[in-house]
Amino acid sequence: MKGFRERMRETSERRESILILALDLKGERLLERSLSLLEEVSQSLCAVKLNRHLLLPLGLKGVKQIVEKARRLGIQTIMDCKLNDIGSTNLAIAESLFKAGFDALTVSPYVGWKEGLEPVFKLAKSLGRGVLSLVYMSHPGAKETFEEAFIQGKPAYQVFAGWAARWEADGLIVGATRPEKIREIHHLVEGKLPIYSPGVGFQGGSLEAAIENGANYIIVGRSILQTERPAEAAENFRRESWRLLRLRES
Ligand code: XMP
Image 1 (tube, rainbow, N blue to C red):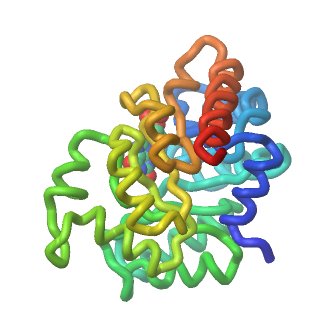
Image 2 (image 1 turned 45 degrees about the horizontal axis):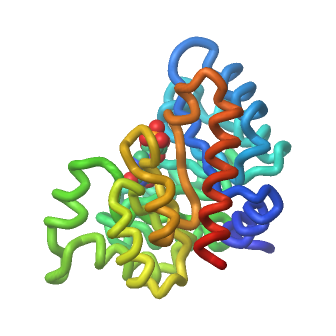
Image 3 (image 1 turned 90 degrees about the horizontal axis):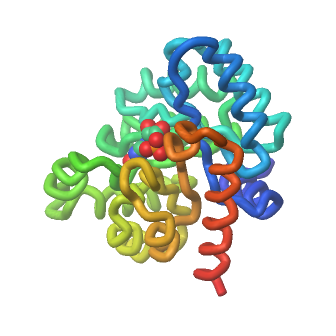
């Protein structure tokens, strides 16, 4: 069985895309609009990321329809749930999400391994699904907890990068708003884990700086969703990010 990391790589190569859409819609006719937007932009994507924006109003049944549509469209699905509870609760949530068909989910390393995230990683591995671990978030306040708070005598993000490698996570999440941290974290894990980077555009992160410094996948929401022509905006992000990745790798 191919793992999530490999499926992402294959989808990305096939689509010539490292773009992940954060499908964070709000308002009326949510399911209908989500499905039609996904269809409209899917050619430019390697994956779609959902979070509680859709899960709460639509429930798991509604979200499952989006996941199934994404599968038919040939892209991977990520649930950005940032699991951060005790192991038994994390496991129950992960079971429901994987049952709904998600290819991967996100976790918060703050809860640690033993009776924290261990059961989630084990479940994901047994099902060929992925786990992406937060290392440094994209918003301004992230500095207080991910950098200024120390764990084992080091800034938290440095420890989280090491844990993600030890836990065999399928990827690290590092905000595009801090390209210098992307570079440092890329080196800390010796380039062995892909870096997923949200925060481009709307949150002020630069696409170019994120990719030049080591991001492997780019997560974009509002800079696509809140434009008049989302398909065109997504295609521009796809083309430019693919070009920058090729440039870095040449
Ligand atoms: P925008 O609209 O800012 O959306 O392009 C970004 C999306 O990514 C999520 N997000 C994060 N997820 N770590 C994460 O796991 C982060 O640091 C982070 N920053 C933003 C956000 O929820 C939205 O879906």
